[in-house]
Length: 491
Image (tube, rainbow, N blue to C red; front, side, top):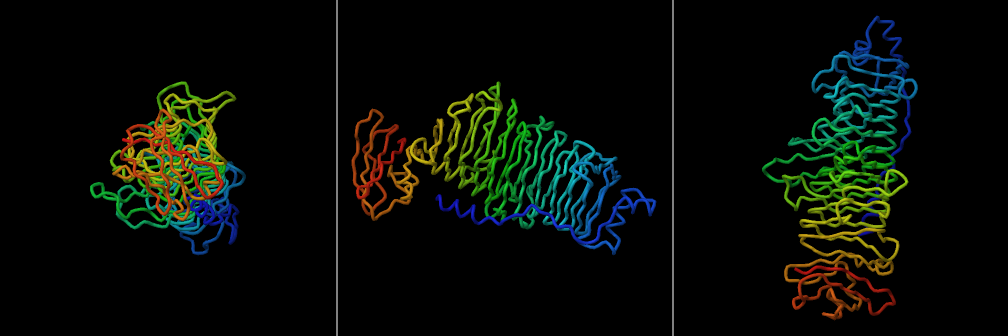
């Protein structure tokens, strides 16, 4: 399984952050002055003028530009401001759920701009084509800063600032209940941006980034709808005061959230720093920093793996790796949060090498697994994959098993999981059937209740063993390696 995640990381395409400016440069101030036009009319003129070609640059000065209506960008153009955030585009007559700019063409770049949506109900940028790039753009006064209901690919967001005046979502890809084609969502890259927090004015569903590829009929389940989202990277961003919530993913796959993203939870902790649901799969949460210093018991866990309220548990997320993250207080002292992780209906969860010693929780334990989770790996001793200061519990799961003593040498033998089947058979996943093993089972008092040798099989029967918690010790007989211990619960 470790090899699987290594392949996922290594298979990611290299995504460059450089920009190549080419084609003719058009100075918008000269166009406004020469044609005695407003900015609004000048922009529409450029969209219609045949001399303006794809790849051209529209240069805007260090001043404010007012749009009276919507701007539909129908050509492959670069909109470049003068200096970081010194060029402001704003809408004067925004009302209701309006939008400012529609990206109807592919290959559009916005750089060195401040864009003001005009009110707290508007969508500032709507995307209806592929390969749209934002570099050093500040978003102000809107319900959603960047929005697509067709889930286009190639989105690049670099070094942008989503201010407190963005009320609901910073970036939202949401196909809702559409039955239309799933478009290409590959190679989305969000890097180095700041998402500032503010209490949402419409419930508690505010997230900085929300990617939902759902297009199923409400009454017909969720079959055959997983999108082809691939190679999505979210890295080096700061989510301040949780932005209500940090990142929400549903029905997407192959996403890496890594490389020192910083999640700073607010005192209310309105929503999860990372929320995964509805068959989100192959998600890596790697080397991030989670900060929380609450003084209220209410709120959500920092990490949530599960299903939405209308889904069945079998539609939970799958193949989730949480590795090398640090959980601590926002200040020098230890922090406190509602809970670090809650999981329900998830399958194949690897929790490795995380540090939680500087984080306490109102709800115990720090990591809670309930309602039909399967295949959980969460070592608290052993070698390099050991988690630090983690306490955890599993309840009402199809497989009530977790591994807490992983030895590095044994891990190389791919002894990864333990599962139960209905007849109380203990099954070892990926056990080398050509090797000999000694399996000892101890009850809660430490008394040996079962001793068996395994060779050519990966299963043992536990029918005569009493209910409750037991320890299972595994020793490979023909090789000098340390023992591995599992804690199991028999119903």
